[in-house]
Image 1 (cartoon, one colour):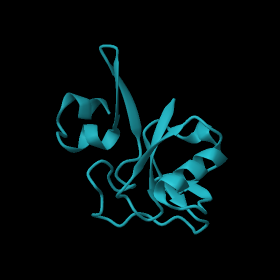
Image 2 (cartoon, helix red, strand yellow):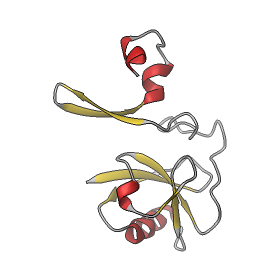
Image 3 (cartoon, helix red, strand yellow):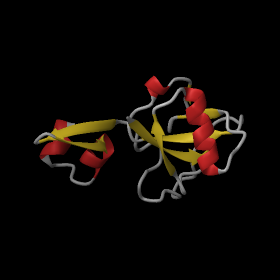
Image 4 (cartoon, helix red, strand yellow):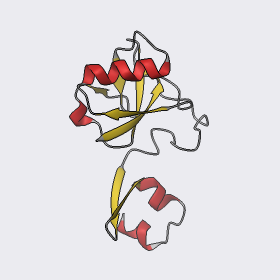
Length: 122
């Protein structure tokens, strides 16, 4: 089962974790209920693309819930630490380390230690 963190459109704080095991209509409804948006109607990716199928949602992806208004990028500097600005965190990776799976972003691997082996690999 996949999961995602949903935020209100234009915000990247107070996210809610939801399971992605339903059709897209039910996911939008669940996300809206968790965020207190009963008229939620659209999910956006962190780059502003609307999502019309659960097959397009990656595990642990940050999604933004709209009540019909266009996508609004979260304000810079308002990140809560779990997710960064959408422009900085777009390439999610799954690393298999000794049979244990870890999810992270390309920017996490290359941003801090630019001369590390992981940075050179990615």
